[in-house]
Picture (cartoon, rainbow, N blue to C red):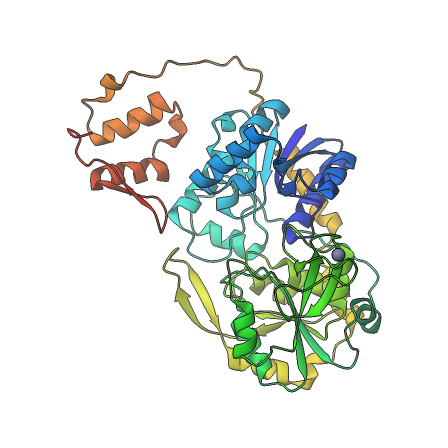
Length: 497
Ligand SMILES: [Zn+2]
């Protein structure tokens, strides 16, 4: 069977990348053919090209080579139009046509993988999505996308149970959590030596993308009242999220925050106290930047980072899973995390310390519920000596009971081998003529939208979908809201159209 992964490049060190790699390995070991559309995989980066060439499965690097002008122009056009070229949408149809996959899998948020179910080739392959359901309620267009996939699974029980309350779930399969490799623990002092971090300081760490829902200010606020405590902040700055240096200043932590840096020139990883944006590489003198999904650190470096900590903290307002909390626990580090959404499951399973939630807030953009964590409770947890008294081997043992790679791989292989395949790549293509414009001229708004779906797009599966109703409502209302920032006006009445 041929399986296409709409992935985050398996060579990288992000949580998604590690999960996709497990799937690619599991399917390859089970004798299936695997191909990967690698988001953040860069054809200009020799290391990326080398990995792709030597890999056991086929890899399509998503960022085109600078000299390939046609591909670069198409990438830019799609990114400008829909914002999802960076997730692989711009080359998806081309690759699908070449690979003719039986199954296409996406494991990310709905807006990353939407192009899979919206593809005109969706009738030819079976789609399986594992979206990160990180809160409730889910927006109508997200649920519509989940419904349009052939199969849906989730990262954890909390998300599965929540989805059961949200739609009919005809395509919902039991949850599968990512697995984590159990490896020998790294001693705290050995890890600190490797990172050049003093052994006598107390170090609280977090590994989070720089996004609004990760509550960096709450962590810095709570740490600011502790004496002689440092923070390891494995995140990216500058990024679209928090202004981290201003937060360091605001909470008096300007000389107490370590960050992970990668050299743009020689790719060397180092860990430094945050000082300025133009820091220099000690090896080659090149410019170093904070680690990001594209220029990240290796799994071994990341294990050193976790192992050097005295405590791991994940302050968030909602999580679809929270991979770093389990990675930290597998390294034997006790975890503290907001007791909300998917982390409610994880906290119980890895015996983490829950941070109380004081209120549930509604997010304007999505209408989703987000937790407001109790900073005073976090402050108390961090100030309590007993928080830091734990047995590393016991923490790791507990985490490994629920999140093994074996269980994850077996569950995914069972899932792909049990789903119904469409096997319609070889069916002859029926090319229907596009109707003349004057045929549509006299139609009412409802008739017009229906006509566009059935005769122009020739995709009757969209009848009754969120997109169908959105376009009809927009046509009736006279404008189409495209995003928060953009709106395109369209002519209102049938006669004017
Ligand atoms: Zn360097």
